[in-house]
Each structure stands twice: as structure tokens, then as C-alpha cells.
Image 1 (cartoon, rainbow, N blue to C red):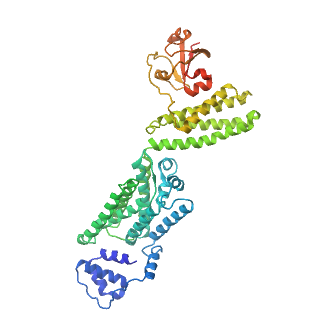
Image 2: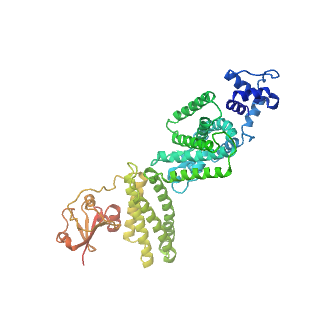
Image 3: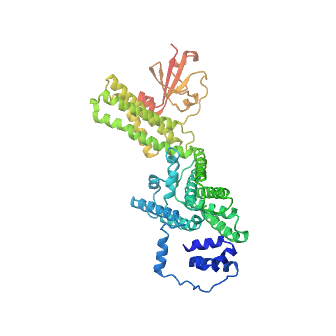
Length: 516
């Protein structure tokens, strides 16, 4: 390609350029013209111009053929067109699958392999690579591909196919990891080859800085031009919606890779590098990225979104048991349904654990987490009750089960509306004796402050319902108890209390167990 000769000419000394012109018969006409143009630019003497005619302007047909050559692998331009064609092919496939040409939907991009923290950090690290071949619209694609062709035509000729491909892959992965690390614990959907392309620019920058053959007089203009290009692109990347972290990550990785190459070659630009050295460089690079990737915290919005996704999947599977129970009705058989219900119980328990692990929910989402946790626990209790009823041969839709399902439906309505105002807050009373063994329905120790949310609770003493009373004026039977007589106090609230004890427990339940 013509610009390859121009790049080669820039890297040659004045004496070498003059030798090319003098021995013009041994070189392609385009190479000689590139040497002459470079000598003119430097203000140096051109040995001979005779025998050369100025090239005629290209016809439209020639321009078309030259354009098509961009997509065809050639001697020193082999990997670049393959990457170009692969990116174009992925875009066409995505369009055929329904992606919008100008502004593709983020959800569809995630489905096709975009870099998305809640998925990439939880078992799908392949997204670090696949995301580099996806783009956010045709304009994004065209800008990246123009940059790829521009840098590829220069760099691949200098370092060869293998180094160019290794650099592209490592820099693309580095950009993806940098993107995840920078936005964590928030989330974003990241796509594009920009990280890899910035890495190639960084690599060429280091090659020019460190190589020992060109003098600084010839290097200065080239380095200044490249620095301006990189600076403009980084400044443009400061805009909203542009993943500048991937740009910087790829750029730094490319600079490091370029420096390592010149150290291996004694600071000479060459295409000849040993396979063992290539393997060591690749393994070392992957190891660094691996460690960096696993240091990214799985917290905040990333964990929250992942948890909601997992709970949705668990719920879908667990509800299959309920559908089968409804279909079978009173004819449900224990030997068929109990294993299915137990599997559902396991799924609800897993969801409960996931929700309990959220300690830093996004601002404003704490109530949603609390509501979901109550909902999941009620579902688990309902399944356990159904399992026990089947095993004992009891009627399935007895009063307690109906109350439980009614409470569940209330939570479902709350979640669908997104209204979590009814979720109880826990703070207040501290005057209860600290030595009392208090716990919640899940068996976890409970601070006395939980009782602050209880209004007119139902008191239950050793399984006997005593009735309701204001929380500071309990029944006589309760006031007669000394702390030494009480083994434990269990507090039930909200839908959980109503599901077990009915409407009379709307103000909460205080279960008191005495020492026998």
C-alpha cells in the first residue's frame, strides 16, 4: 500500500533514501517516489529525477480497487484486514439479529456479549474479549475501523503479524478490565475495539521513542503528531457515554508491550522475535490481567443487579413446583411432589442468602431489598408448609396456608408497583433487659431495638395466645415474668406474622418461651 512506503521512508536515514533514488531500478516506482518525497520534505538533495514521470491522478475505478484492497490480506498488511472484516461481520450479524444500526439497545448488546459487570464478574469473563468486537452503532464502528486501518498499515509492517495480533488481543483485554475496574461498584455496558486500537497507538509511540536508528530530528515531528492524535482522542473520550477507561487501559498496555518488544530486540525495530519469548510475554500479560480482574470488587450496584437477576432465575424455577401443585390440586401425591418442593425450598434459601449478603445496596434500594427478603422468606415457609402437609397427609389449603398465600400476594403487588413504603423500619426501645435471649424468626440474634416497630403486638406465651396489647403495657401474665424465667423471645413482623397468626397479628407478634 502507498502509505506503507511513506512510513518506511520516514524511518530511513537521508543516505538510505538517496541510495533508493539512485538505484531506482531495483525498487517499486511507489517506493522511489516515497523516498523522493521524503527527501524533499527534509530539504535534502535528490540525486536523480530523470526517468520518472509524475503519477497520473487516479481514476474512480482505481480508487475503488485501492479501497477494496483495504479488506484483502497482503504481505505486510495481513492481520489488520482480518480484524477489519471480523468486526464488520459481527456488526452485520448483530444487525440481522435485530440490533439497531444507529443506536443499539444496551440489553441486546449484553445478550450478544457486551462487557457488563454483573455478568463478567460472575462466571462470564469471556465478555472481556467478545465486547471488543461489538459496537454501539455504525458510526462507532466506522470511526474505530478507520483508526484500525490507519495504525495497522503502519505498525504491522514494522513488528510483523504475530506481535501485531498479540498486542491487539492483550490491549483489548486490558481496556475491558480497565473499564470494569474504573466504574466499579457501579455498572455500565461497554463495547468497542477502542481499547485495542489505543493500545496499538501506544505501542507505536514507544517504538518510536525507544528505537535507536532514527535521529531525534526526524523523530520529533512524528512523535508530536502522534501525541496530538492520542491527546485529542482522550479529550474527546471525556464526554458522557464514552468509555475513556478502556482507552487509557489499552493505551498503557500498548506502551508497555512496545517497550518490552524493543528490550527484546536491543532497541531495533524488527519482525523477528522468538516463539519462546512470545509465549512468555503472552502468559505474563494474561497473568497480570487475571490478577487485576480478580481484584475488582464485587459490591454495590454490581452485586445488587446480579442478585436481582439470580433471584429472578431462582423464582422462575421454584415456581414450577407451585404450578404443578395447582394442577394436581388435592390429588397431589407426596412421593411425586415432595422432592419438587424440596428443590424449590433450596432455591428460595439460596435467594435468601444472596439478599442477606447485600450490605451496600444502592441508595434508595434498601427498602426493595428488605421487601424482597420478606417475600422470599414467606415463599420458603409456604413451600415448607406444603411439604409437611403432604408428608403428614393433611389438607393443603388450610387456614394458615391461605393466610400465607394472601400475605405473599400482598408482597407481589408491592414489588410490582415498586412501592416499598410499608416496609418496617427498625429502631427504638432499648430498655428491655439486655440479658434476654431475643431472636428473629430465622433464629438470628435480635437487638431489642427491633421492638420499636411493633405496635399493639399479639403476645404468645409458650404457644398460648394471650391477646394483643400496647407494646409498653403487656398482659399481666407477661409482666409477672422475671428475666430469669424467660428462655428466649422471638419477634415476628409484617406479613410473616399475619401469615401465621392472621389479622390479629397485624401489629406484630412477640413469642415468649419460658424455661421449663
